[in-house]
Length: 379
Ligand code: SAH
Ligand code: SF4
Image (cartoon, rainbow, N blue to C red; front, side, top):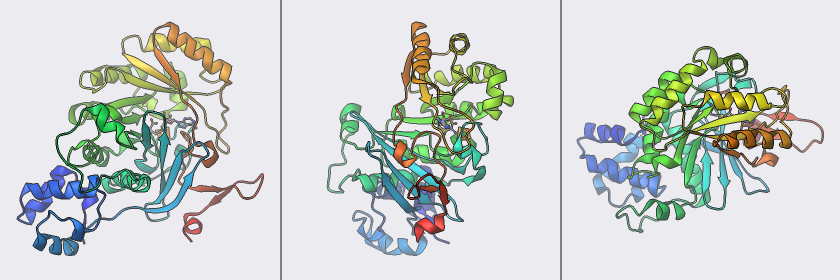
C-alpha cells in the first residue's frame, strides 16, 4: 500500500524518509512542495534529487478527498462538499471578510456528541477524518482560491505577521465545521502541526482556532502539546441547562470546564478564551441567563461570540429575535466582556454554523426538501 504523504506531519515525513535512508531535509523539501506550492506531482518537485523523484511514485501518493460539489453563496461564502469514502461526505466553508479570509474545516464525518441544536449531531457519528482528509480541505480550498505560492517565489525569511497574512487569501483557519476536533485528537493535532509548520502552511498559532464543546482532558493535552487559539461552545450558564443542550456536560460539568479554560490560558497564544453562545429563543437568551454567565466566567479572561441559531429541518428550536440578542450582548458588554454577534453567512447554500450535514439539499422543488445522496451528486 502506498503511503499518502498528506497523512504525515514534519516528524512523520522525516521518519518516513529516514526509513528510505534519506536525510531530514528531504521531508522539508516535500512539505514545501505539498503545502506551500500545492504540487501533487512528484515529477515536478524540481529540487528533490532525480533518482528519488523517480522512485517516489512507486512508494507514495498524494491522495486528496474528491470534491463533489462547489457552491458559492450570494455573499461570497463558498462551500465544498468532499467525498471521504463509503458514502460519507464532509463540508468545508470559506468566509471572505474585508481584512481576513477564514476557512472553516471539518474534523469528523458526523459527530457523536449529539448536541440538541446541531444538525451534524443529529446525523450521528460516522468516523474520524484522517490527518490527510483534514489538511486536504485546506489544500483544496487553497487550490480553488489560488492561494498557493508560486515555486519561483522567494522562500526566505518569514515576513512580519501582518504582511504574511495580508498576502494570503486564507489568513485564518477555524476547526468549527462538522465534528468535535478534540474527539479526534491525534489526527487533528498532526493536521494542526502542518498548518503551523513554516515549511508547510506557516499559519500563526493565533490564527488557527480549535472549537470544542468541552472535552476537558483533551483541552489540557492541547495546551501541553499544541496550543492554538481556543473557542469553547458554552451555550448555557448552568449545569442543568447545559446538560440538556450539550450531553457532554454531564461528563465534564461547568466548574471543570472553567478550570480547564484557566489552565489553557497559561499557554494559549491568545490571552482570552472565545466563548461561543448559540442564541435559542426562550431557552438560554434571557437577561437572567446573561447575568448568570457573567458570574460563571468571572475568573476567565474571555470574549463572547453570540451565534444566532441556524435552523434546520426538525430542529425543535427557533432563533432568538434580534432585539433579544442585542439586549443579551449589552448586558455582557456592561460587565466589560467584549461581545460580538456572529453574522450569518452563506445561508442560501446551507453553509452557516451548525448546518453542515454532509449532504446537499435539493432546492429545485419548491416547498419540499429532499436529501440528495452522495451518489446522485457525484453522477
Ligand atoms: N464540535 C465543535 C466544533 C463544531 S460546531 C463544537 O461544538 O464547538 C461549531 C459551532 O457551531 C459550535 O459553537 C456549535 O455549538 C455551533 N452550532 C451548532 N449547531 C448550531 C446551529 N444550528 N446554529 C448555530 N450554531 C450552531
Ligand atoms: Fe458535535 Fe459540535 Fe455539533 Fe455538538 S455542536 S454535535 S460537539 S459538532
